[in-house]
Length: 85
Image (cartoon, rainbow, N blue to C red):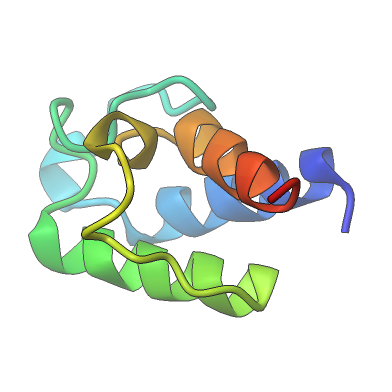
């Protein structure tokens, strides 16, 4: 799957699952999903599960730099870097 397709699917998922209080937050690839209140901890874990399903890879939360998990762009970069190892 192309990176832009993957990013688009994640953006759509986040827009559909964001918290009600964040309905007016503009969501883009660089949006910090936690600091803006777009996702809470449960929705964040659901996003990780969705990303794992899309990528057919497991994300080890104990080994990932947390900065890569706060935005869609960061998740894409993490997965891209992992595909080179």
